[in-house]
Length: 501
Figure (tube, rainbow, N blue to C red):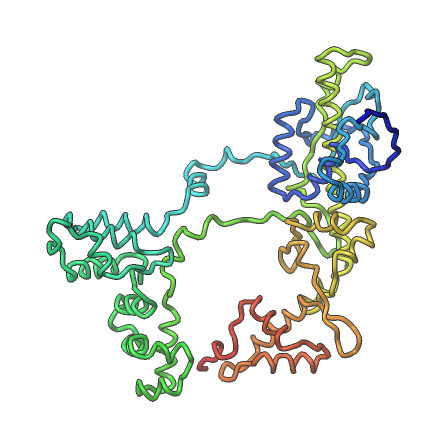
């Protein structure tokens, strides 16, 4: 083959590192953003937190970042083959060749009066700090601690440890006594341990905290808790008889058969059921198996002032950054030394980081304001007045791509007089109405919850009945859709909601 030179003209979109940074900051949650800001402060000497001393700020380039072009570049890059995807890391279009060195270097971006680095940790004692950050005690650790405090022989303690190993996170014993006996038996003397001794140790462990632990099934778990109640507890005997002999009838809510078999009046059966419902069918659930509690800091705050809904960024999450004036003053023009190049590069990165933060907050505020304008009825009347809305509706109004709106609304939270909601909560599909309009699926879920809350406990509403009631309000929903919405609300079916009044 003969080597030749060919000249080709092509056109493609490229994303500069600065634009990539802006998109990445746009999709970060509040906690992730704070981590990103701290890393930037640690790695870039030009960046520093701004003090609330009222110093004047140098005007930051307020040209909005073109997220639409960025999304188009992402799409074209994803469609191109892997070896043809361009990434022009040297393209600094939009940045001046010579950064001006003026007497005023404070690059301050302030979106609120609060500072993200206000530290009050020094006023808190070490005890509360350890309590917040210590790993929660697990059920296995809690049971092992009680076993070590119990006066057992060495053999019984070995049996007890084997039993604890067979208890799952819910607190139930998952192994048969024969399996436990086989695990602790001595191969040289297989008759040294008998099944009665294993069962005696199990009964001792069943008295441990939490009540009901080490039960082999639901019936035994509930009976353990009932036996630990004082003997003068009202309806204790009736509740034990119900759990021991007729748990299946109770599960199917066959109250007529229960009253006949137990020879109880309706009042007596109601008291027994109330006592059973006060028990914990999952004794291990309250231990530390569920993980740490997660707290949400809202990014946007919505208030009603003078009959108008106002939207503002949360000052606790809006960072105040600026360029360090001392280091910036060291930058010299027409100096290509390594030190000066280092300072110039970090100065450029600091300016872009501040601009990306400003663009992120401006976009978040614009999208949140548009959402509030669309969902004013929800804020004033509640979930039943939620209007159907999709990403395209907001994207067309603010002039952005749908994927940009998706990034803005993911893991971003809004504080309203009705609670704290993720921005994605306000987006929902629509269901047609008999009048030719549309109803939000969120509003339909709220209506289902309201209907179930107002139903007769003796005759709970079936899915078909709920569909008929919604049809009377002009909303045509299939029974299968009602069942899907009901399950998403964790509402059991009608046969499980039936109860005595």
